[in-house]
Image (cartoon, rainbow, N blue to C red; front, side, top):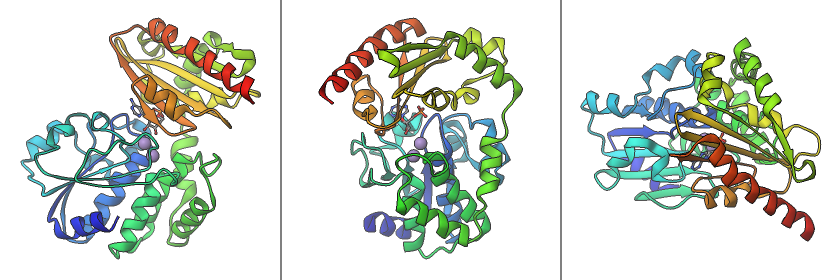
Length: 326
Ligand code: AMP
Ligand code: MN
Ligand code: MN
């Protein structure tokens, strides 16, 4: 962490990069770092090489975020690329092309992180990358006002399921409390993220429920969305990112999986576990990554059914193995 703080202090131009298929922690970490570094007088561009999900559009600074084309067009030449919430180069899209060309640093909390930058601070004991960002801001002596506290808080709340998941430890509660004391508004975040659903999402989810399968004596639940289904309900993958945790909430379920065809023959496998199944290792074995209780993988060149056939039998076997050991 000290090395990264030093590199940030020394740099004049900083490119802050988050991961593709961005979530709340990612956008929070990018925008909190962007805002803080700008207040220190740095030249900063916030970047994510993916379309920002519409629910985040009401955040004031979200429109400042550029993708790789936007970065190239800006003619900005940064001295440092600060990457947040990303476990591997393929998670930052085309910004990976800059690795080896400019100085790079990463702040990440994924269990499956593999070192790929000049400087890295990786600590999977943090529930959210935003908690690590908070510590960097404290070291940089940037004080939080209401706006910055709310942005920073968003990451903690979203990655801990609004302080409900097992990663919501005392430190997460204390960090959240600290940000609320500084003016952070949890209800602004919960209204934006939890109470903002489109009717079409419910209709799509109804079909997801019809297609849902239960396996391994009720321990595994899965369903899927094909491109046709997204089109039928006028939805995109932004609209279905919360479905997997709904499936996990079913009584007795340990693992929930959503197979989502986010582009033709590009299947995103989104996985959640409830209490004991380690998904980080499993996700890595199919080319993805993540945390113990939330992990994912993106598989290209196969149909939804082919990916289901590849993943489900293996998960059933692993779940049954673990149960027999218990
Ligand atoms: P998701 O299911 O997309 O919400 O992702 C859950 C967790 O897994 C997040 O922490 C992601 O960063 C991680 N993850 C998702 N997809 C991938 C992937 N293709 N490669 C590595 N990690 C991933
Ligand atoms: Mn993330
Ligand atoms: Mn995260």
